[in-house]
Length: 471
Ligand SMILES: Nc1ncnc2c1ncn2[C@@H]1O[C@H](COP(=O)(O)OP(=O)(O)O)[C@@H](O)[C@H]1O
Ligand SMILES: [Mg+2]
Image (tube, rainbow, N blue to C red; front, side, top):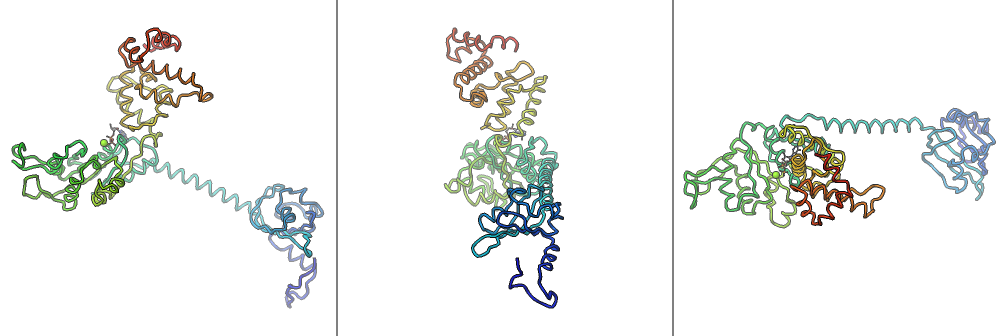
């Protein structure tokens, strides 16, 4: 290697020579490694020894493809393409970053130069940082789950982190007078949340008045909400009647199933919410409104707006703080504590203790819960009545659940075994029929099979024995 024509000649460096060049290379903090075309190491600077921990004399003349068969330099010699970036030296176990470029003589590659440095420490620190970040994220999540909620929220069972976010927001908004719109499928606990919000607000000592917009016939809704004056219409009660808005004065009105309100009623409601005053039906006196509004629905209001069945302006009026409650199937981590709450409640009523068998726990976990928490509550109530012992077994669950649950009950090792699956389903349906019918004859009838077939199956599935041990 000779000094190139581009080398600068100044008074500081009066004369380039081989010794001076190598001295410079030896003082560079990066490793400089030169290979010939056969991957033989022809030069390594002092940093090589410092960084790789191997004396230079030990590697000079040795082939790199023997020492470090996966070295980038070997690839560079083969392809002639410069490489820069990160790689790893297996022979010494360090991460490096740098570049390797080929040396040409004419068109021929005669060797290559690698210049790199050890970044193991950086890599290690990055890894530690990522780990710390992971731990921090985890702790943050934990913290969220333990963020104290107001007392009124404590009957609301829910540790799931996404649900928890909603509850924390709900607790925050509860202290304001803002309108709240609670969204979520039927049975997720919208009403429970509305109550918690009211009980945590400064209006808690005033009434919380619920209006189920879906249950009241359209013709009556107006007088239900606004009340009426004496003689407002034929059949109107003498002395008139207070409407729900008046009853809720100073407190909260909970407009449940708001998506089921007719468009004309929506217009009237909007006017009241905007003007904060109204007149009773058939009356002339204006009543001032001092209420907080919480609305709830399981309808797709956005779609209804597109279809023209829900007023956009009312939507904006209500949608100031939307709270979305997750369906139970998306927060099954709460199933156990919800089940426990209900079981404790039913057990207390019956004066005994109740637990779930492992199989029942699995069925509950696998089930899709279209009716959400309400359905869970009903299922457990049913089971607690049917069960005479202290442990709820599969046959105590409602029949529809057992047959559905059977879809997930195929054996893990034989998931498509028809005979096996049908036998299981058959057995559980028989157990359910026995549990739900007064006697064997009616169970037989419910199953729609002959007496002989019925007893055959009882024997085959060992049900007789089980029934006896069950008491
Ligand atoms: N998170 C919860 N913790 C305790 N009980 C709940 C919870 N969510 C729902 N429930 C119970 O489930 C039933 C249905 O709740 P509800 O608020 O009426 O649902 P929605 O109004 O969404 O249809 C009620 O009996 C309620 O007590
Ligand atoms: Mg409801």
